[in-house]
Image 1 (cartoon, rainbow, N blue to C red):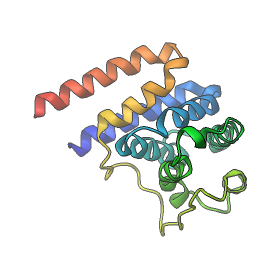
Image 2: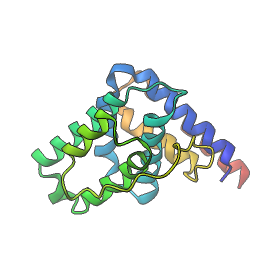
Image 3: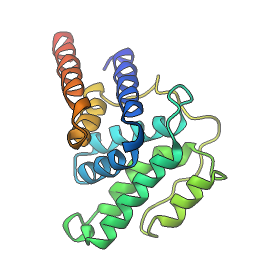
Length: 178
């Protein structure tokens, strides 16, 4: 994978997420609902996207809105017994949230609220030393990161067509380099 392409696709996904604005909690909830039972690569891509959304100073995304979406997902999953349909639900959620929880300071009131809302079955990773990565070293395939965003945004219509075009461009670029 080309790291420059990965970083560009991740940046595009974050820009699109930024444009969602007030619908970030809904987007996050839909992303988690859609991703928990997908393949590892899909969950990893969403985890990197959440980490970058929560830590990147370049995009100024509201951490409170991100946490609201995660908490909404957890409440809905518990109320609807999603664990019956996805037996490894909390393990998968741990994998998705891990990168973000390793990098966002635990002193944050938003993170404290999230930690209190998570069921005990969700593994909470230790904080990593130092500042969060900027995504430049990400090993997430670019098409997976963008696809995770596009699929989750299917209910947030206007941006979906732009994301679909981006996915096609990323996939075409990867096919050209094969």
